[in-house]
Image (cartoon, rainbow, N blue to C red; front, side):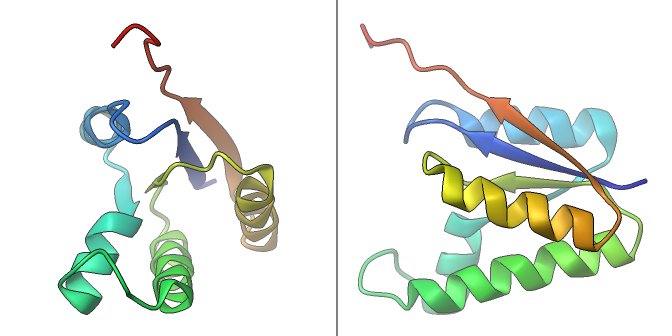
Length: 107
């Protein structure tokens, strides 16, 4: 059974670094909103975030269909975003997990 793991943490907390380490250890695919945004628009501001969201979901579905575990590299601070991935995991017979990346408030 494939696994969707959502990274969760504030900007600059190290989510992408942790995601990379997890992916190397588990051979999972990383789907990153930042990477998709850059690939699609070449910039980070003034882009169509709905298109990024759709592409993100499409990438996850394709990876799951190939039997791959997926790490979704995004903040996921709003529980509604996690609910979307829980529902998608159920729809595709995948497991679901959240990997919290804590932020040191003194940093």
